[in-house]
Length: 105
Image 1 (cartoon, rainbow, N blue to C red):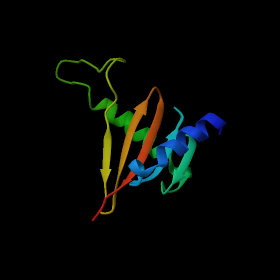
Image 2: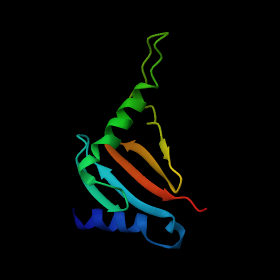
Image 3: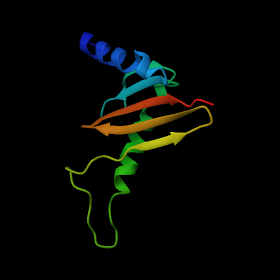
Image 4: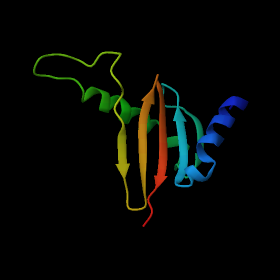
């Protein structure tokens, strides 16, 4: 990971405003994990997040009239909720970002 990437990831995890961020993961367009920090689980299974973003993008299609979301459409934000945390997943220009947010009881 390059120095600039490390700085970016560390800035996303550091500071009092981000005390509830439990981890962050970034995949390339093929689903290969580029960065994993914090409690994001097994980096070997990180491609699941990339697959989820692709499947969610397909939900934006309208089979009734045959239209498909174009390249200018914003990628959907996926939220996976658990008892103690939520994972937010979104595609940014082919890179999939997943952020674990801890839920306060």
